[in-house]
Length: 234
Image (cartoon, rainbow, N blue to C red; front, side, top):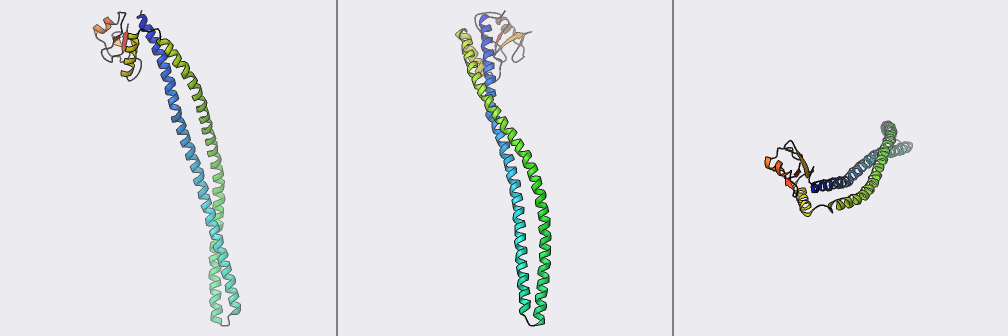
């Protein structure tokens, strides 16, 4: 049977580790929230990039339309001039300009039709992808809301765990408690109070000396692993 003070110290350790776990979970929440918010920002940026790409195509189509109208105006101007000229050479020159301009108009109109078809396809793809992205954003916002709820629950549990730890420390002798706190600071990871079994420390799993194994059987003061300095008992 372990030293009664060790048994009390094991309860302190149990409460301490429970509190640490809550603190770690609570500390992870802002990190998880930030990661979700980053994903939402990226998804939103993707929607905006697709919208801007689609908008640029609309601008290109509008520019083509304006260019067609400009050339149609030029054709009307050339036809009016044809009615006013008197020389055959001038008439033929205007006819050639009209033909060249009409050919350019036809080419522009083909480009405009192809662009309109591309815009229709892009618009359909945009709406489909936008719907998927919005669902993902909605899901991530839901996860953020769950994190907020979880944080509230953890904070409530944290207060209870702190009170339980404080209560468990009340019955421990100062010598044991002070050394527990010291070992806790020195040791990189729990546990801090461990049992020696088959001459091996339950913390570092290395063999302890015969002196340590013998001393750990005695009550009244804490004993330490000569490898990792954890408090040990048998």
